[in-house]
Image 1 (cartoon, rainbow over the protein chains, first blue to last red):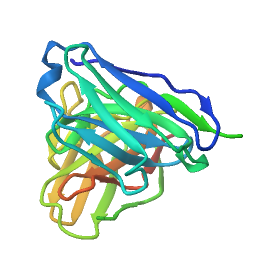
Image 2: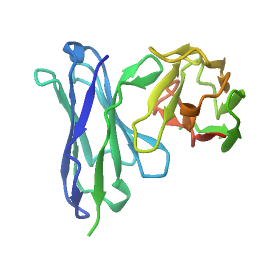
Image 3: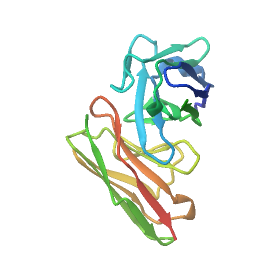
Image 4: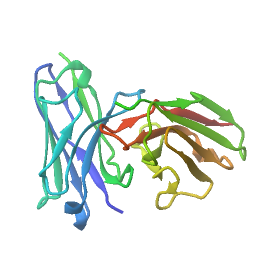
Length: 117
Length: 107
């Protein structure tokens, strides 16, 4: 099965920036959409963003549009989430996953992002 | 956005008993519904996709059914390792949304 590994989470101040990454092990990485989903510890799952297999299309949740940018480098089998103008409410564990039928499969282990002064 | 509600919030049953979880959508999602299992400190794991299809490697005690706005998820005979949160999620309309989850406790 495809393995996804999320990394890059850190502690940043409000208004700051951070880039998290999602690296895949699969040769077929360039054939599927990748999504980011976040979760405040002890709370539910919230979809954040996705990107098409070839990187030509990306969509965002209203709460992050204009501040977050998703991109991918298929040669490096990696998807990135650039997060700017971070807010306290962006604090969460960020998971990446690949699209699979109506759901998301091969979730990465999550990378924690804390926005605090 | 489509709102998913789940019931019950918590279910506590004994080993070997049957658990049935419900997920209701605020509007039709056809069969574009998935179920996930999440244990503390772990990423979610896809269990059911397209409302009734088991993901690879999922034991057959897990099943799902429904379409439109009403969906059920069943664990036919609870095992200790089934203690977890279970979330439904839809991709019938953009953006994808998740339900609030049901906690399953196995006594």
